[in-house]
Each structure stands twice: as C-alpha cells, then as structure tokens.
Length: 316
Image 1 (cartoon, rainbow, N blue to C red):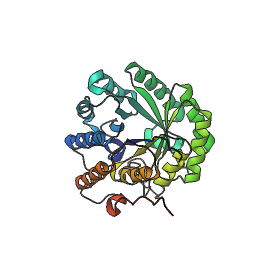
Image 2 (cartoon, helix red, strand yellow):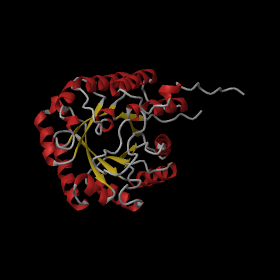
Image 3 (cartoon, rainbow, N blue to C red):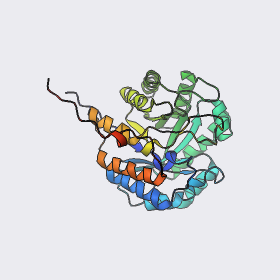
Image 4 (tube, helix red, strand yellow):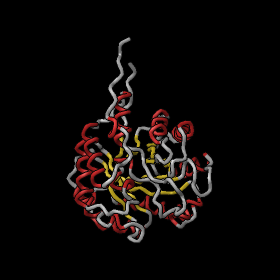
C-alpha cells in the first residue's frame, strides 16, 4: 500500500474566518478556539490580523490574542496578516516573546483591479511596500508569507492569466519569499485549474513552500484542495464551519463570496483517504459544534450534520 504524505492543515477561523462577521467575537472565545485547535493537533494557525481599525474592528484585540498564545508548544506556528508599514509598527512594538509571530502574511492580488479595490495600490506601488515588510519581518525573526489573491480569477476583471500569477510568484521568490499562498478569492477555481497552476508554480519554484487557500463559494473548495495536494502542496488552509471568504467591504456588489473550505469536512476526508494530518477528528467536530453555538446559526459543515462516513471494506 502506498504511504500518503503528511498534510498540514492551517486553521484560519480566528483570522480569515471571522474578518467579515458583523459580530465582534470576544477575545476569550477566540483564545478558547485557538487553544482547542492546538489541543486537537493543529500546528499552524492563522490567528489574527493587523489592519487599520476603520477596516475591521474585529482584530482590535490582536495583541491580547497573541499574548494568550505565547506559551504554546514550540512546534505550533502562528500566522498574522498585515497590509502596510503602519500596521507593522504595531507588531514591532510588542517585543519578541509577547508576540511570538512565526509568519507575517502580506496579500497581493494577481488582478491589479482587485489590488486597487482591496488595498488601494497598483502592483508597482504595493511591491515597494512588500519589499519593506519582508525586510522588517526578518528583523523580528518572522518569516514572510506572500498570498497571491485572485490567483484563479477576479470578480472584477474576470479570468486571470496563469503567466500573471507565475510572474508574481517568481518576483516573490526573488525577493526572498519561501512561503507562498495561492488564494481562490471568490471560489472561481476548478480542480483541473488548481492542479495545473500549483503544478506549474511547484515545478518552477521547488524551494518554495506552497499553500493552498480555496474559498468554497461555489461548492468546489474541497475538490480544489485535493487537486492542489495531488499537485504536491503539503499545507492547506481550512476554517471551522466553513466561515470566511472575501469580505463584503471589498466588492460591495459581488454575491456569494462567503465560505472557506470547511475544516470539519476536509479533515475526515483526508484521514479516510490515508493522509496523515496529526489532528483528532472528534475534537474538531466538537469544536465545530461550539463555533456554531457561538455564531448562533447553522454553518456550512456537512459532516457535522451527517457524521463521519464508515471506512470502506478492504475485502471483496
């Protein structure tokens, strides 16, 4: 029997999952969920965001959340998102042990139209900022992580050329980026596209760790994630309850933007197929039920409704 590779799932509920929620989640609830995710076996967490307060009040407690995770095991890695130098000033003010940030994530959209709508900068303008943030990340001992948004299509300008994504990926690698995310911002990918694009980037940038971040807007998120794994990706993003997706403030008239790949659905599938994740499925399902209680509504998990499927028989 062929041994399948280990796959790292990054739980993104506490950052990408709730960035567009109208409800401001209490710091204690965020910390509880992050700690429970660590207890379940997650070794990478997208924990919080440093964005201008006018953009999102959800992350006004970023410092408190990080401080509450300062005693985590050394193998558990924390990501944060930041978009400009002023936000990075806040990160630098923490001090090393209080923050313990492992990855600083910076977004750039493959579509310049989306970059202008989201970050109010052209590619040329934004690249200058990113170069500065890469240098500043190194100075605090954090690794830079670049996320290429709209890598599979743009809700403003439509299809995105693979060569445009590749050019950004190669530019990032030349700047010293060794952790690169391709993000399907509004769920426009399909499994063939996911496999082809990740395969191309992996073949040209073999020293870069690739991360798959798919939104489940059109119901293809799990299939797209598995296609990325087939292409060699070993780190994938998920979110409890399938929460998250493109914040509505970016594109006011775009419908159906909500939904990351649901942790409670992807994890049992991967383990059923024989991938090693190191994560306790039952604990994750219990955590998913808690997140639903917190949200006060039914979320997107199908497994939470139907239960884990029985393993297939090995006999005739």
